[in-house]
Image (cartoon, rainbow, N blue to C red; front, top):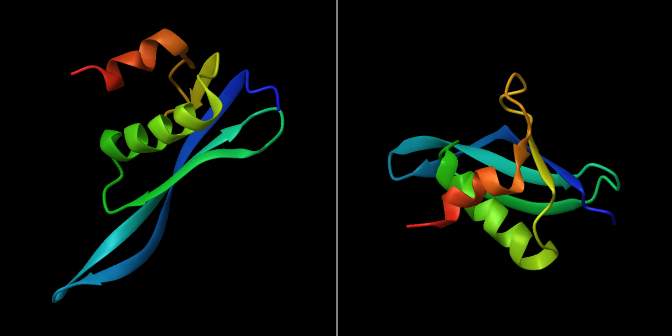
Length: 91
């Protein structure tokens, strides 16, 4: 696995029952562009930065930091360089 460029995308999942209400679920996946290997994945009930951050933290803990992270959700934006998403991990 080269892991120079990773891509992230969200997909809607099935609804789950939470008490009397149903909640939509979301899948966040991070894939290595060259090998197509899934380096990070996580399910959540919100399609948000928190779900993305949890997924990315697990991927980085296991496989390290990719040189480029391409966001498939906002294709109009340029790819994130490793330093531009580091602010997700600072408090």
